[in-house]
Amino acid sequence: MSYSRLDKFKDKAKNILKRTLDSHITLAVTGLSGSGKTAFISALVHQLTEQANDKNMPFFRVVREGRHIATTLVPQKALNIPTFAYRQAMDSLTSKPATWPESTKRINTLRLAMRYRPNRGLRAQLGDTATLTIDLIDYPGEWLMDLTMLNMDYATWSNKQLNMLRSPVRKDHGAEFLDVLAQFDSQKSVDETELKQISNTYKHALRAIKQHAHAANLQPGRMLIPGDLEGAPLLAFFPCQAPQLKQDNTQYAQLEARFEAYKAQVVKPFYKEYFCRFDRQVVLVDLLRALKLGPEIFAEQTDAITDLLAFFEYGKSNLLRRLFSPNIDKLLFVANKADQVGVNYHQDLALLLHDLVKSKANELTFSGVEIDTMAMAAICATHNKSVKEKGRTLHCIYGKPLHEENWLTYLPPQPPRYALSKAQWPAHGFDYLDFAPMPNEDGTLRHMRLDHALEFLIGDKVR
Ligand SMILES: Nc1nc2c(ncn2[C@@H]2O[C@H](COP(=O)(O)OP(=O)(O)O)[C@@H](O)[C@H]2O)c(=O)[nH]1
Ligand SMILES: [Mg+2]
Image (tube, rainbow, N blue to C red):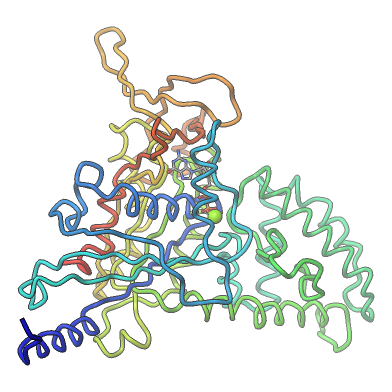
């Protein structure tokens, strides 16, 4: 049969449709250091590229309805940043013994293409397929916290840092720096060696606080993870009490200049390039670790998360605007690593997270953003195990605690359903355990509710 004019027309129409209907989405995976961003992205790629079947992802409609054809990793658009090391992450997650992927040292990116059969519109009638491109970036959570510096001048920032260094969980680690600072003459002319030495002491304080107190709010983030700024003079600053009278060419003026340069040359470009062009956002929160670390860190984490949300653009935008400057119109809050408690406590976790973010969520809902909150685990490291005791069923978890040899059946404590005040905090605290990853025999990974998360985040793009 010859290629008729009608066929030609159909092809042309298809091509135009392809251009208009093939869609693109940039998903912001947001979370403090250690909240599970790298694991989440690895799991998302793994489940979509290797395990997208209705048994594994029943709540992701495009999969359940048999319309998902395949998802693959495709070359990214930005050529100047490294590609997310998916293979490497999978290798460590499925090696024997299995280990978690390394913590992220630099920014990296990845692009997925999802091919599916639309179920509505002209395209569905033509029996055609469509592609959704999904862009993701991964970055050290430590750098994210720097965004809040953009709203502060040096004096305000210094005050805040110095106050924090005196707080109960930090003071032991910050003491040496505060001692050195007490001897520091900020009014004399610049002594490069001294500034370098003190900034080193400050850096050691930050690193000790991160390592031992697991605090979330540590600035500047590049002192912890320098990327390619290792040793740069720009990084040689620290918080310092403002003098009564500010003078030029003093050490104080130099510190202030470095602080401003750090903001302008490091934080702002990072923000501009990567943080203001998202369509959808998932905010990962490690509530269990924060509960384990106690009321002070818990409160700090909550504040850090709500402060960060101020740096993203939210709201509905029309189609044209979307192309040039997208706004986030769907936002998912996730209480991550829910596999560290029994399934009977997942609801508690989701309620607790809801309680923490509810006023921010309310504000955003008002401006048209769709919001949901859920408990999930990107990569399950435990199995649920019911244990009968004196006629009662206990919902335990079973797994291999991190850095331990033996497997363990454990009954984690029930998380609270709302933010506790310091006085309400139980005396014995909350003891949750970290577990090593637990891949299946066949090298696949399990998740909890990643399919729910995907349905919420991108389900409407693959109808
Ligand atoms: N049980 C459990 N642990 C997780 C999960 N995701 C991450 N983790 C743990 O959290 C740590 C930090 O995760 P990572 O993805 O590196 O966090 P990031 O700093 O936000 O990228 C990992 O090394 C694991 O110990 C999860 O889904 N379940
Ligand atoms: Mg990471």
